[in-house]
Image (tube, rainbow, N blue to C red):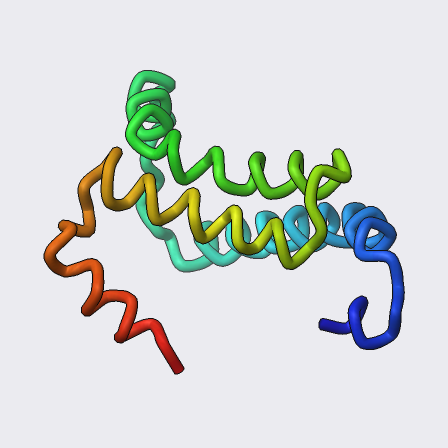
Length: 115
């Protein structure tokens, strides 16, 4: 919203927020580690097989930000068109691929999502 109202290039906002975002993720990771160590929270060992299985189950959700960034930064679509593509992608994935939303409930889900 800021970029649109202030008429600033959205791509420049993304690029400008990349390094501060990385620093925030690093700071939050350090804070979580220190808090878990202080509160003696049980550590769960990392297993690559579990991570790969989880990634395989969530591949459609992981592809959404990739799709959004690719379509917008390649200049294929404007910001508003990119949002429409994201909604259409989610609609197809949720109804046809993962079948989390049955067709008979699709209308009620759409009505509930209206403001």
